[in-house]
Amino acid sequence: MADEEFNSDDVVAVPLRHPWRWVFGGVATALLLGFIWSIYSAKSIQHNIVTQFMLDPRILEGMFVTLWVTVVCMFIATVLATILAIMKLSANPLQRWLATGFIEFFRGTPLLLQIVFWGYLGIIFPNLFVGIPFTNIIFFSGQTSQLIPAILAGIIALSLNEAAYSAEIVRAGILAVDSGQVEAAKSLGMSGGYTMRRIVLPQAMRVIIPPMGNEFIGMLKNTSLLQVIAVAELYTQASTISSANLAQIELLIVSGFWYLVMTTVLGFPQRALERKYGRGFAVVGARSEGRAFKVGKR
Image (cartoon, rainbow, N blue to C red; front, side, top):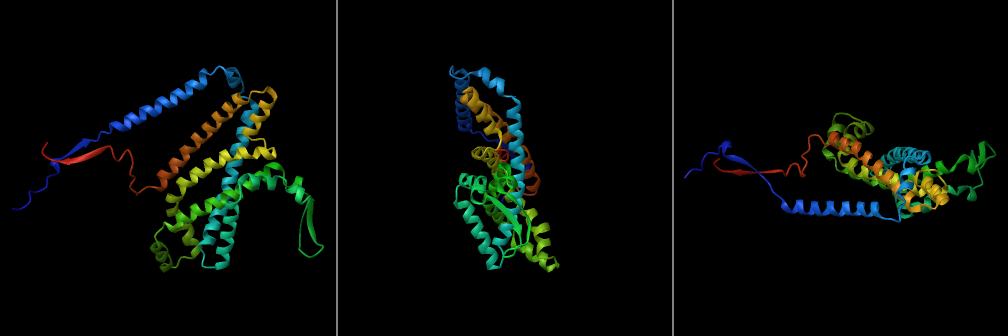
């Protein structure tokens, strides 16, 4: 007996129902609201101080420094990470060893230790000289503390550390691109550098952007570690104010609120970039699971 002819009119969209998702969502919402209410109703917290310093000029200045340092460090780290990833994928063993050594060193030592090292570099090298080695030719020299102030030391430490982690993200993105793309580019006479810039990296961005967005947010929060070398970022400013008025908890709430605002705002361009470089690829998620399809007579 021949199979019945398939008719598209027999396909009926049936909404999927997931009651446990609503239950878990409701429980999570209740817990979040309970936590917020517990902080708001805590008598040990002076809410007038929280309100007073929420828009304090020193707090806003610290926010600007935090954002500026984050953007600069991520730009430097992204450039270095791309170079390190290409070196690690190179056929030249010397480049692979150098890239691997750099990555393992900066991933293997604590970030706080690296910040302290660069911040107190003047103790190890009181003066820095730039010239030709093994000669008396010196182009310029100066005190280390003047050539590398605290904020520059922090940028160097954060950038180098982030470059080591981001290099593995970029390398994973490059490896995710089909090797046939590179072979096709070579067959057309494209150079290796041009192929990397115009063929490989644009396709690798789809894989690179989500984890790099997380690294960007992590970098913003890691700037709080620069307090140990007296960089006037957000957490340092909040700590300075709290040491004067002894309102540590209140200033922690202020700084935590602004960190949350900044990380939330930074999530919007990340999602925009993900949509841009994810065009043409199927996305499996809550929106795509909204309906099931059932074959039968309507």
